[in-house]
Image (cartoon, rainbow, N blue to C red; front, side, top):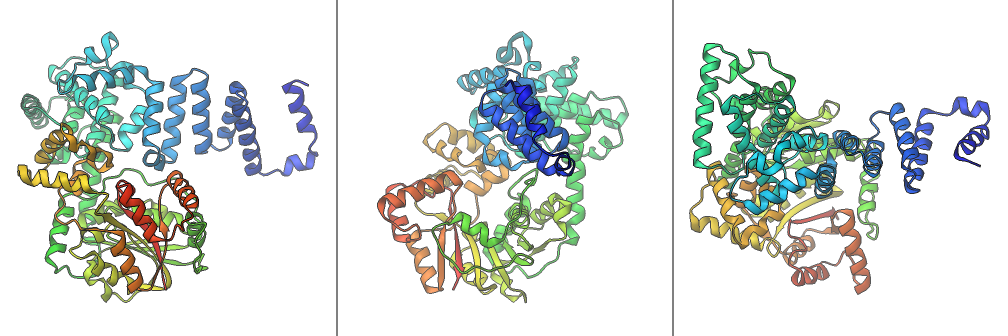
Length: 584
């Protein structure tokens, strides 16, 4: 029986009434399963047709978009594949965080000229290659319209040195093109706008040269004169300015909004003028729960008022909320704990919420979550509120407060997240004790603490920075990064924080960093009657550690064994200790 006959037979096997009453969800599920089976069998044309039928019924089916991209790639249709992958990332932006390296590898595979340019510029650095040297006669147009590349540039900071250096060189080429006044294709202008948005996201962390700065000043004056006197301005000139400085920093910024622009420029104006203005408008709407009296707290507050952390663009999409008990059982399948049994109302506190990512993630993933998120920095809280999806706004309350004073609020919580705050206190354990007073009996706490062992290269980099006298200004951070990249301390590029200005400041220039060891954490748990549930890793690492502990006959809840492991493998907790505890 051929495929057509099998499909007809399969369709006729079902009674007519069953076909009529079959829900759209069931139909989508069946079509997706058929498409996946075709793909598994390498019947790519059949798989493509089936995935497209899924998307006709449910255009926002992220997995179908992703899989169709994979199929298009297998069929040798890179442009179609790139568009499908970009759509999947628009629907589930969290994949950019979770799978950044794999996405970049896919992008290079789909766009060979980009891969060649990355290699050439990496080999030539610190010389910036020209557009012709990088792409030949085809020029920047050979990559400018790639959907996946455009999606990546506008959605997340690039997080590898080779990509950063290529974009640094392309920015210089586009500066020269804009200054020359020569005609620029629409696709290249659109690429320039995407690069401008990338530079805003990473807060202008790319290196510049003295000559480049002088050329930028001339362009800035040309644009300012045109805005003042009325002549038209080539869109690329606005895009290039936005690649080097935030447009809201221009004295004549408001005049940009008085003119009509192509959609790509309008998007840049929204990012760099309208959204920052909205954050300023929100400043007086943030409640102040406590005073901020402690000197260390005040210094940390000043840093985050100047440099809200972290910068992010899109909240996660298509997240299925589950009960907190289920979440922890999935994280720690071998560890028992007292279930809360809460599915309708779960009171969550996010201490040191910064720009809101953890607060938003908590509201999305825990069933029934109602979140109070506080931070020292009003600038960070305004960024958080502006970026909070409307569907979640009613369930997240943002407020300014200091951990040292927060015991004064008359509220208690089922879950407290303290993964972004204690390591920036003079005494992390004091802050931990205070937060525990707000946790209900049998409540859960998620913590993040810096490892003394795991951050040895960060400590060395901080010592180098102090010795060289670098300040925490954007210009000093840019210069320092380039010096670090030329020496053994380049290992700090393993941190994604290295690739934006405010995050690099948080990583290497922070006014207060405290680090702990596993024995100190264990002692605190014992003293405060806290049950250790386990360290939190991504799925792949968690599986490897479970296998390792099983081979050794160890319990994954035994902190002494974790200490032994970290002693032998210093990079085990190179980011930070991330773990869960339950109040006794």
